[in-house]
Image (cartoon, one colour):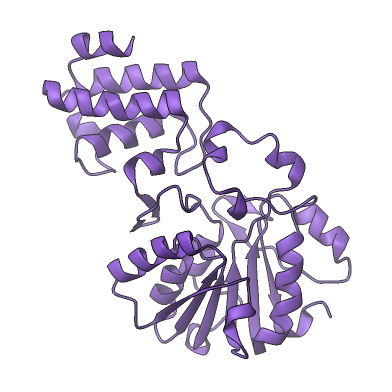
Length: 297
């Protein structure tokens, strides 16, 4: 069918219809930047044709050269048959208006924390009060870069246990010209930071419970398991962040951690801790906030 398509499709509209049909037929899983077959196909087609990622309509009836059709079909075919996340095919991911290089060494950025960071946690934090910030489990460095863009007077430390992930983070930090404001360190959570203290700590740690790890769609199994697996209840790393944050947060400081669908498990594990669950455009309950004085002992 894919070979036949090259001989019969002519326009971007033709290609888009064909791609959506194949994606639906394949039963693809989404969630790495889009949440449906249409948006995923449109993104990949626009990328293959070197067109703006947010300008599909003007080009729908444009006829494609054979070489353009070949390149676009090859990208779409790989998405359908190899079940690779689109970001690994295009080597890019977006958080808002910011683009980041990604590859198989890091999970694809999709953090609920991004919106809260861009807003500066405005209901709880004065931007001018953040001079030292920390991003735990930084991956490709996207949240550290967002922190630097939001808190303009802050120095940002970013830590990851994976040297491979830090190679990607170094590239992104360099591309945004932030090497003097963001310091990347390899190690296990707070271990490489000695006695440093912070006004704000954020983290998007591994938090997928073991039962869910065993049922992940194929797309998610392409991502590094180290960045996903959170133990039996998903809270192995989260517990260690809570334990270490008390020593690393300054008085008046804040901790913000993404835990996905782990709210119920977390509140059962720490029933006396008054977690704050901010709302975002994508819902609520995926990220908790805690001030330094209310961290569990």
